[in-house]
Length: 226
Ligand code: MD3
Ligand code: FE
Image 1 (cartoon, rainbow, N blue to C red):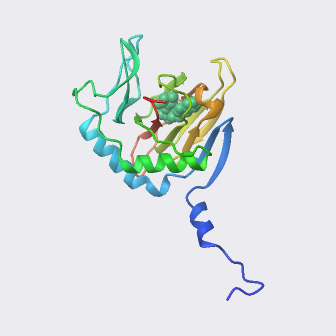
Image 2 (cartoon, rainbow, N blue to C red):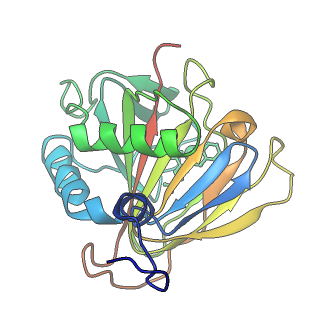
């Protein structure tokens, strides 16, 4: 069957590699897994819909009093919020007073598999911030430092319209790299990169077949305990 001239393609290796279009190192401990979530897009978008039916997307206010252009909601035991009192995690949604919707199992599975592929085995997030971008919205350069420990990686999942992501260094003034993140791309930020500055440039107008004129980003974090 597989004679000397017959190339053999191992189906197990194939199933591993078609899960993503490749891996790129972005920085120390930061890895892009191209297309890692693409095959799960229908399920992930349905879960976003379910979460936002219970905890609607809203524009939060920064401690300085500015309304964020990106709309946000959360699922999991802890949800990231901002208002005039500051940035923090809360176990309840300030809009309803109820706990955030539970973390969907497909989010947990994806977080674990992506973190493992990037070299961080056993990642169990307790917080998922869901960001919704529309054309004209952006996220200014910042650090993620509201979590109890920085020992865990962060897993970020891009869905819908592409965006240009900015990734700097430990100082705000460090030079930034720009990376285009497309539908299905997953980035794992751990090690030294965990505290690097990052942001998303103003979303350009466009239409995505599954999300219309929108980009969604899941940011899976371990916020509460070590
Ligand atoms: C790099 N969200 O919600 S996640 C955020 O596309 C946030 O919505 C972006 O930054 C978005 O805080 C990007 C990617 C990300 C998350 C955490 C990081 C990049 C990071 C921590 C350190 C370095
Ligand atoms: Fe961030």
